[in-house]
Length: 299
Image (cartoon, rainbow, N blue to C red; front, side):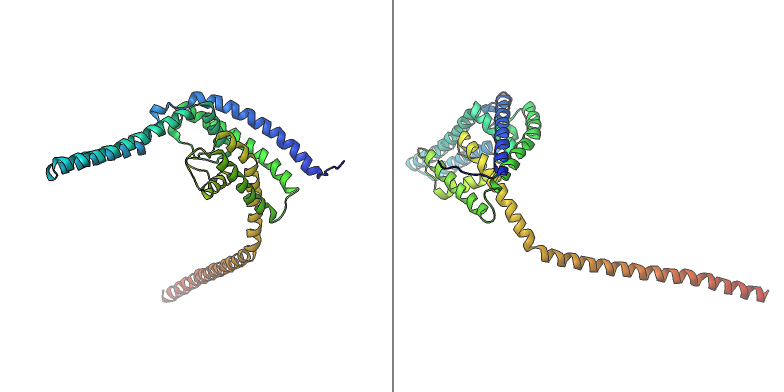
C-alpha cells in the first residue's frame, strides 16, 4: 500500500483548520437565525435610487404625452403613447422583480449569506436591509466574527504554505479561480447567459474580498469556494507583498538617506541660527557697558 507523507506542520494546521471551520459553521447558523428576525421587510426596502428612477420615467412619460398631444395626429399619438407605456411597464416589472428578489433574501439562505459577508468582508451590506436592532447586532456580530475567521485563515495559510511555496501560490490562486468559475458557470446554466470571463471576474472579486455589489452566486456555493479561495488569496497577497518589499528596498533606502540629509541640513541651519543669536546676545551687553562708561566719564 502507498502512504502519503505530509509535513507535521501541515497535519497540525489541518486539524486546527477543521476545528475553526466547525466553530464558524455554528457561528454562521447563530448569526443567520438572528439576522432573519432582524431584517427589514422587502416592502420597506425599496431603495431611493429605484424610487427616483421610477419617478423620472413617470415624469418623462407625462411630458412626452403632453407635448405630443398638439403636434401629432390621433394615430401617431396613440402609437407613441403605446411605446412609452410599454417602456414604463418594463420599468415597473424590473422594480417588482428586484422587490421579489429581496423578499427571497428574507429566507434563512439570504440571512446566512448576509452573516457570511459580515465575517468575511467579501461584499457590501445595505444599511436599509436591517432594522436598528439588526444594525447594532451586525456590528457586534462582526466584531467577534471577523477575528474568528482570521484565526481560520491563519491556520489554513500555514497548512497551504507547508506544501505550496514561491510563485506557485499565484498559479494556485488563479487556477482555483478558474475552477470556481467553471463550477459557477455550470451551476447557473439555467439562468441568464453570462460570459465565462464575467464569472471568472466575479469569483476573483469574492476571493480578493473586494466583493460584488449584486452577486448571483448561490449562498452554499459561495461559502464553499471562499473557505479555500480566501486563504489562497491571502497567501498570494502576502507573497506579492514580500516581493514588492524587496524590489522597493533600495528605493526606500535612498529615500531614507535623502531624508537624513535633509534633516542634517535642517539641523545645521538651526545651529547657525543659534550661533548668530548667541553672538548678538553677547554683543549687546558689551555695547551697553561701553555706553555706561562713556556716560560716567562725561559726568
